[in-house]
Length: 186
Image (cartoon, rainbow, N blue to C red; front, top):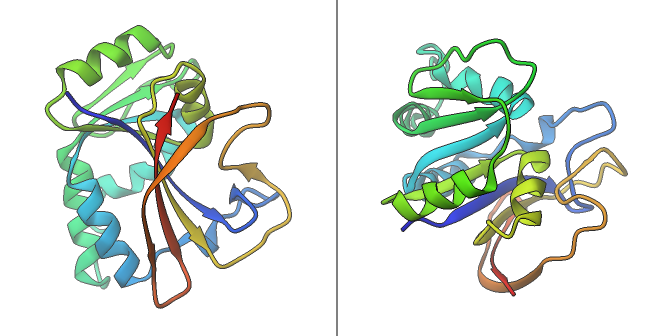
């Protein structure tokens, strides 16, 4: 059985993007990227909403790692090897391999996916993660906090959501990023 994991890179004040939907501050350095890659190797399926899928689709390109450090090519391979499910009512079709489109998020189907999975399942993007959290499906939250405050934007967690968490792991990186791993508890 796999765990459902919500991983996000956010600001110290709790946003995944600023008021202009920018997240240029979130680019991990090589040390953080290598650590993140090791976490992502355990993921067999990514669950995305339309917006997160459109951001992540860049990893489908063979050219994404050109001129980049080896950790970038490593992540591209990890991403391409995983299954992907995109939940969208507006997306006409998916363009990446190993990807299917679903029109609605079905908590029972995700529960079944977790039970049948031999690897972890990752829910990407705060909107879809909020649905999974509200349905009681998320087992872990993995947060990378960047040393920046943006004052508003798209929150890591939605308003009016209460989730109890138990700290399992933490790590500080030379560039100022902090990793926090939490188990969702009843």
